[in-house]
Image (cartoon, rainbow over all chains, first blue to last red; front, top):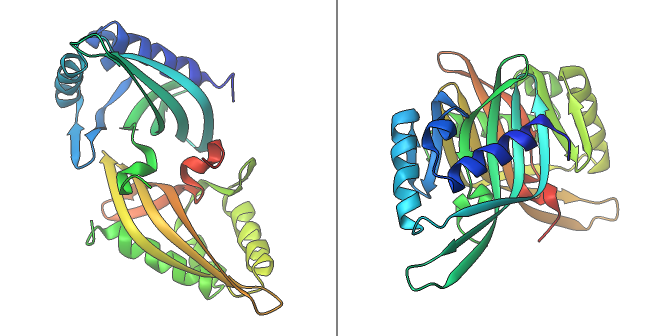
Length: 132
Length: 132
């Protein structure tokens, strides 16, 4: 899966998060996309998603760095489910470094040939059901 | 999430698997759907998916019973990601009962108002990256 086009796309989106380039970041989302901010809190549509990322950047003390680990893609027609190991690093206001590893689930839709947009961004993966 | 229409739909599909009613089962899938049979083995399209379910029924000694636990749905426009606790019960040829609990991920697409079809069926959830 190393060469799947979605891998480069997700890397670019994560770079935009780290750089707090929210204009660039919004280009990766469909107009009707949904972002799971935290379990039981979902942002829908670009306006809400952008606001959520602004709040997330502040919450993480403007230090958020997101890196990718292993990735699997299952594609059905114009729809792809991405399962991705995601490493979330941040530094809190006391200078303490934090690192979380998540198994994220993303759904992408191919709007036109080669043009994939994120429709569902759920970085919590199956932990939405509660942490095992 | 108890009353989400996809809950009833998935229950009905799982009933069709238990009853080995493959004609009924195929009605739940989009023409271009993908089914993860096992990690690194994906069936694509109704013909392959039907054959996979026939083989799965035999593999589980025609004793497969699938039950649902907790469920979460994240919807972005016409696309829904379902995270579902799935209990897989079977009895092997020696009469020994087996029971597995999985956290499945399904992607459904609303083809027309209220008409949802499964596009991606990945009962392994994030375990596609390897069991933690």
